[in-house]
View 1: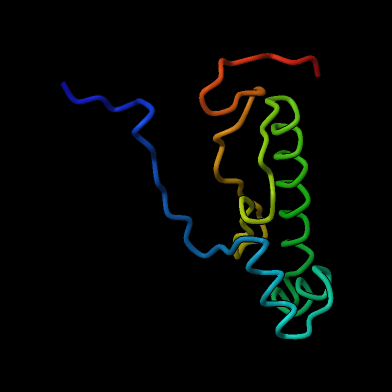
View 2: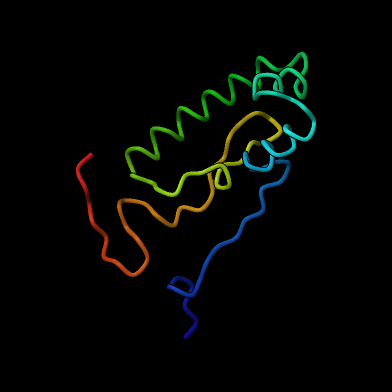
Amino acid sequence: MNNFLGPDVGLVEVIQDAVTLSNLKEKLYQQNIPSLNAFFEHYYGKDDEKARKRFCRSLAAYSLICYFLQIKDRHNGNIFLHKSGHICHIDFGFFLSNAPGKILLFSPV
């Protein structure tokens, strides 16, 4: 019997046209771009206002989702910036206070 879900099975999806925030930070440092604000002005040019709105809206949405579902392990290597300005989270291995090898526990919010 072939199992599609289990401890030895995972899913992989390629996110095209995106970079992790940690890689972006390193590239900005190498190019002497001092801030995310300066990056938006430099990269998006006249469309930076649209990109900033996409960034802010997706940041707010992911922040709420991560808070309510108690998604852990959020760091710059698990957050992508898409070329459109949206952010995208990956690696949802720790949520609702679970950890590998432990039972699922619900903690008060």
